[in-house]
Image 1: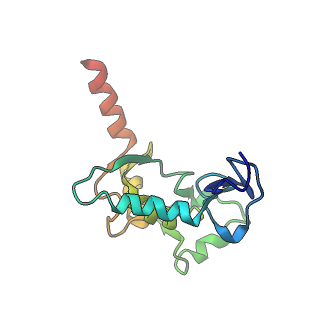
Image 2: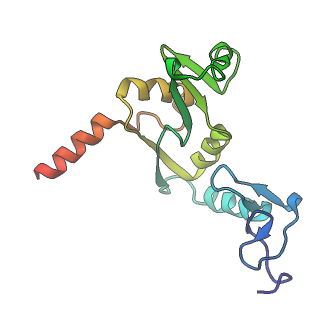
Length: 170
């Protein structure tokens, strides 16, 4: 496809995925938190939002299941932090991307809050995690304190074991 006929809607690392033309950085929105190097044109993002908002009330959203650790947050036990990482313990009270609860240190992944805001417009989001329910509750409360994104839609390791056991017993 010729570069002049392409709208350069979807790109990676500065090049259009359709026509391989170089894309102007000012004409795109960076989505590297979803995929390294991914960028979408402002027009493409706006058309997606218009389409989504045009669905109206009562229209069904797709469901999106997200894992917690290494997807939305990084969690570490305080005693496992290296000497170089221990400064984070002192910063937990002063940073909005960092939280300490007992022996657990929780750090948001870059752009996690932006991702949740945008994904919430398109999806009904769920958390699926192999974490213990107590830890999942702490993490989700930090990530979504007003229950805007997940509500009570959290499936933990114990829940998954139960669902598998029920499925196998049928």
